[in-house]
Length: 253
Ligand code: SAH
Figure 1 (spheres, rainbow, N blue to C red):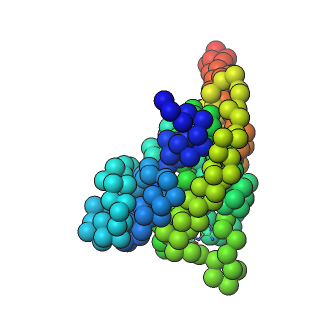
Figure 2 (cartoon, rainbow, N blue to C red):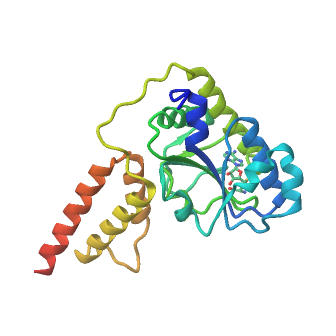
């Protein structure tokens, strides 16, 4: 394939933007245009309120192809199951903070990971009125905040998308032909594998009465944060799963 190590091609192949619970179809169309202008074409929609819709197609202008190929998902977990890296965007701080970076830093990480060509990289955007839930942000490896004014921090959805797409393009352009293919012996675990690992750890914690099931407080959020920021590879995830299974086997004896 020509242009195999071309940053912009690798970005187009691996980066997808996912819009969660979008209310206004016009925003979905504007998002498609903002993405395609910057060379990002994979769009995922989680439970959009109205889609397909003529407003979306009208606002997309010459990015109608992005809408036509958009994939609609029932929930975010399913939408990011195949992703080796998931970036969440948020206009405000959350109770248990995740590693938070600027759009530029996120873009550098995304472009560098896209060189691996190992799986999808997802960037997630929330609802116009309430953003992303804590449960949805828990699925992310990294959170991005656009450093907007404290007086009015929340941008229009498609404008936030434009900023992320632009930074990813800038980073791609500046590394064109320069990025070395990163070497690692085992592929990174994808989001679904990490989620299964966290569920398995939760089972073990319950079986050894580590916490009160009726009152988990922020325990699972913290456990998720640990596994999601560690960039576990496939084999590391399997080692943990194996250890958990061995513990469960001993407990049953
Ligand atoms: N009131 C909501 C804001 C939603 S804005 C809230 O408090 O979360 C709709 C979406 O646009 C957000 O979910 C996010 O994906 C993106 N967005 C808007 N402003 C942003 C900012 N300053 N930084 C990062 N993402 C932002």
